[in-house]
Length: 100
Image: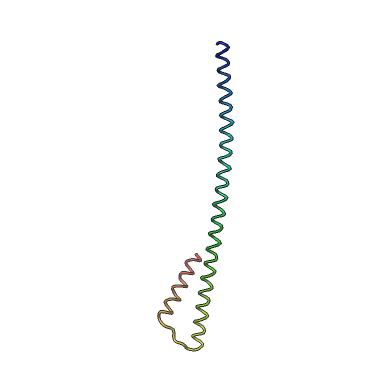
């Protein structure tokens, strides 16, 4: 093999090493990007869970207020309508379903 052939082979070997280093760096950067994306997704999920917890608390308060009104009506013997009873059953069922 000639000197020029050996030089070309060395140059190719150096290029391959550079590509391996670049590829390793690219893999590291891609892993960091994925990690950041996962962190962002987790933050979004936490925010959604907090919103759902607030909704559940609001529903709970609404059902409690409805129950309080029901007790007050019973104290004064105000007859409840079938619609009132149906509404109460629907709210309780929705709350139970949301809790699960």
